[in-house]
Every structure is written in structure tokens, then in C-alpha cells.
Image 1 (cartoon, helix red, strand yellow):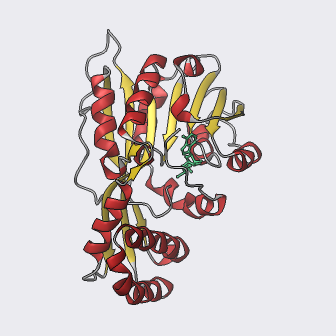
Image 2 (image 1 turned 180 degrees about the vertical axis):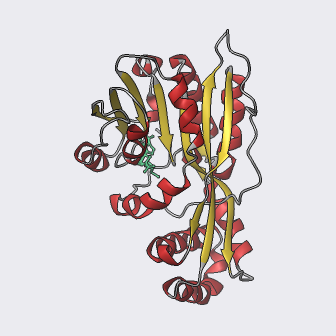
Length: 301
Ligand SMILES: C[S@@+](CC[C@H](N)C(=O)[O-])C[C@H]1O[C@@H](n2cnc3c(N)ncnc32)[C@H](O)[C@@H]1O
């Protein structure tokens, strides 16, 4: 296991939940629905599930009985996922949740053999290139679609602009790409690497922007995100610390007054293994849409 060992708090995941829900690319769900088995129980593996936000969002959008197997290495987060279950399926069918305390970098093909769908959210940018390559191999073995949402793409836009924004943003991105004992983290390069890797494995890949757009109503999340963003930037570039104190005071005052707008770029990927009889899905190219502001994450999620 080398995905960074930083623990993510359930409070942070709760704080970001509404912004995540608003950001996720809904049109990809329609593609998922079309690729689910026509009948029977659908087993859905959610990798690095945290408190289970993906299931609470997606299960009610999908039809039919669902068995969610939610994997995480954090037992506390899994306990929340077990208690805060998704509502019923879109057609009222039952949704069951099974938790697995597991390191997702050590999954084997057999662990996912029953999957009708594999999901993950806010995970890819925390991985190294080797971990991602292995995950691609294991998931390709399952031969089912994957929905991989909310990976950071390396762009943050703050309004109004401040001269320090770009320096902090660059240091934050460097922090996301830092070396760890297990290798260099992918950070903002994860989406392109995953799209390329899955495409090479024989799948069509759809990429959609899924940015957070934070405004006056999101002052709490904005302040927490901002503190983490600047903190990581200063850890990466200690020379920033002097300027960062006044910058942080200024920005947090703006956030409290509802005067700070923040766009944090993410992207969602849908991976569809090619079926021999199917023609290529229009628009499915291993390419990140650049029309949306990319970005970063303060906590690792
Ligand atoms: C940013 S959180 C995202 C949680 C959840 N997917 C969501 O979107 O709310 C990242 C999650 O990945 C989990 N995680 C990170 N590396 C992992 C690994 N190697 N094996 C299992 N879980 C891991 C963390 O415990 C955390 O719950």
C-alpha cells in the first residue's frame, strides 16, 4: 500500500458532500444504466469509499437490486458507510451494502470478478503511476464499466483574483505530485494517465469536467478547502509562509463575507470495455476536456 497514508476525516467528507453531488457529471449515469445487466442483482464495488457518498448518490439513480461492496482501509469511515446506507434503487428495488476493510492497491482480479460496475471517487490523484497501472489491470480483468469521479485536474480559479493565487496554486500542484515512499503521486496528472491507461487496456473512455463551483452559500467548505490548499502549498514551498499569513486572512475574510468565489476543477471518467459487437462510442477519446478550470484538493479528498 503506497497510496498516501493520510487519513481523511468523516467531517471533511460530510462538508464536501453537497459540492461533490452538484459537481458529478450526471450524463455519465445514463451510459452506466445502459451497460448494467438487464436483470438480476448487480454487484457494484466502490473502491476507497470513505463514508459511502458515491453509493448514496448513485444507487438511487440506477434501477434494479444492487449489492454494493464498499472498500476502504479506514475502519472508522467504513462504519459510517455501513450506518448511512443509500436509499432504494430508482425503481424501488433493494440496495444492500457490504463493507470490506481492504487496501485497494492490493486487490486481485478475483476480488472484483462478480462486479457489474466499479466506482471510485476522489481517489485517482492520490495514487502513484504504478498503483494506477496495477488498478487498471485488475479492473480490466473484471470486464465491466468503471465510473471514476472527482479527480483533481490542476486548476483553481479564485474570484476576485489575487497576485498570490498562481504561486500558491503552482506550489499546491507540486505538493500533489510529491515523492512518497511508494513513488511520485499523480496529482493533477491522474485523469490523463487513467484515460490513457484504460484506453490502452481496450476500453472506451469518456471524460467530463466536474468542477466544484463554490460561492457565498459554501463559506464553510470554501474556508476549509482554502486552509488546506494554502497549508499544502506552504509545506511544499516554505518560502511562501511569510506572504501566506496575510493572504489567508484576506481570503478567509472574503469567504466569511460571501465575497469569494472558487472553482476547483475535477474530472469524471467513465470506462466502458469495448464489446466485440459494439461500435466505438462517439466522443470517447482518452483526452481531458480543457474547457473547465482544473484544480486541487486540500485534504487528500
Ligand atoms: C478523498 S477520500 C474519498 C472518499 C469517497 N470516495 C468520497 O468520494 O467521499 C479518499 C478515500 O480513499 C481511501 N483510501 C486511500 N488510499 C486507500 C487504499 N490504498 N486502500 C483503501 N482505501 C484507500 C481513504 O481512506 C479515503 O476514504
